[in-house]
Image (tube, rainbow, N blue to C red; front, side):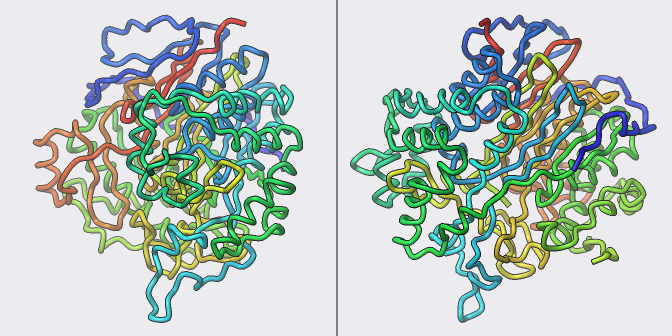
Length: 595
């Protein structure tokens, strides 16, 4: 169905306040440039952190891996558009960023096409196998078998990544399928040098990568992570990628690759079938389009919960002039926390796969509903989570911290914001013999029993119950922000339930506090998801600010920890700014090099 264009979007009447705020930042790393960059530094005396800047007429790619960002930038230089570069980057991450880059997972993609002036939302989330049952993880004693649900072969949902990337390329790309897959094939065939960050990630995950096949692919003969500096080749993965390049989706969902998946699953006692693979389809859905202070927010619809609750929180916060509050002051953070709680409460009751259960998207994203919620906020006191209940509506009828996000913006103005995942870091830790890639454990994102929480503490209801062919609820939130109908920001992050609040704060940093892309990605943030009733916070939130918030009744987690890994591209003064979150090393903002 056709998607709305910018002439159909009515801008909000709220004034965009230009008042700059003090930039409080905790990290000291700057996004790295990749490849042959023609970027010039931005000299802004008021900024402490500066993004990579592309010169006029050049595109930008940001991702959590330098090699993958370089792949996307080179695709742009060879005449590809943003969609070609995004697909190439996605397949490259499957080689160089195995903890989240994937062939065996799924995700969501937002696309803006400048020529037709339209936004598209692509859902390639995994689906439950035909054999799935609502109580498949419930034991005879009535408890949930969390190991089976998270780490066993029964945790695997039907992968969607390959179908989704190929869908986007076939519909909106410009280059041939072989051209966009060749860089990933080359990286897998020729190999690459393992970075410090990848070696560290593999070392942490090694205890879960001990099946014979997985160990052979990702660890050394002694079951240890390969050290940094090791040259790593992946010939089986290269052969899988070649089959996809040659045969398209049939090269993955049928034929040799499909048989290898079924053989691996069957060997371990799983129920995924060849028919499940053949039946999988990615779906185009109408994107969510809302307004915030004269800007347009373009976001993913369900089964992503990210877009709905991002808009819900922005609608609430539009009722106060945040720019008149000091950034990350006690007052500012109080309002953020109090807006987060009811949004996550509503998520627990209402969100699920819209093809299986009615989701009250219009009601949840309505400004009058946000105004009602806003009136319930006490400016001086925190509300305990126990006092907040999901709102009931009359109806007509979770993911890992090692999810990954990347963005692409080409010189023609086309934009891609994409988030995909295996769920846990390295999925369920089970690799497909002869195919070289890991399987997901996305079934954990379903609700095993109404009212119970998943691995990230997010409670769920019957809307997200397991059913054959159903897509599990997700927090992924790839987002595009536009002003006067023209995109100005592409943002997204991994981080499980913290994805939505990280993306929220990146938008507030740009729109309300006029931060550049690097400052917006780097600024300290916090998170509250209703249940459990506690605030996750990062280093850089001052002790005196926390003390004020505690005096208002806000419960803080005992220790800080960084969360989220934002990847941002901003369009400012006819130039592109790119920044990769310094909370994790290895990311890169790559400028399109000269041909």
